[in-house]
Length: 247
Image 1 (cartoon, rainbow, N blue to C red):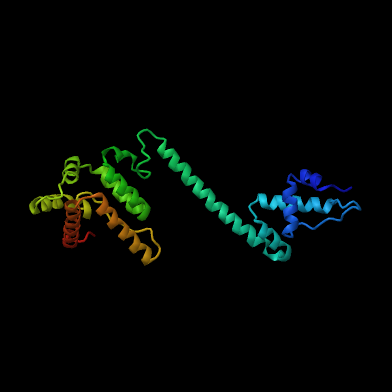
Image 2: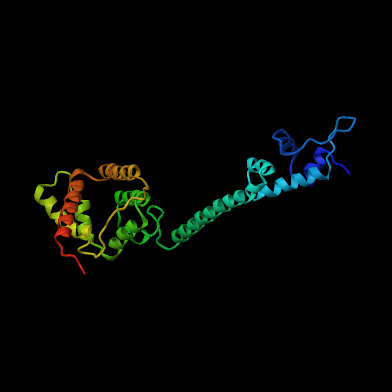
């Protein structure tokens, strides 16, 4: 028994256009033709179409299907590569589901990274934007340290003093605010020092991450606030160097 192009396409769950395309790229042999010029497909054509459909349904590309015809020893490596891609896709989907679940909880905010929903209401817009940038550039461990400080050591009065610091704040005011903030930078007041480790895998990427943070700080905070953060960092580092090491 033989079939026309339309019939073989319907039997294989394909389309006439697809069958013709497989002929063009060499995946499907051309069938014999009847005296009137019509193609007549046989069982071997149907089984080939079903094989291609099964492989492409598993994620095998048409180029890989073609390669499998000439390299029978490479089948396993193709399937392993596709399985690894699927595993990575599954992990990404699981991450998405976890984030969606977190965003579905009461009080969660899409304006801050996952895990910061509990402190979002106390953050101003520029703080939210900076944390969003941090979450992209720095490691999960770094962000956990930031989140713990915000959750476990709320300092609303100090936060407001820093946020309301005018750009023309005098030297004494800047130094006083910096000294108040410093213990939270080096961990002396919290037990959780903040060490921002870039996610980057190369020195160039790490440098780009730190440069991006510098630009973000300049865009989101005024010069007095940036100066206070710089002073707090230097004070915290000096205090950390002077603090005796723990056993």
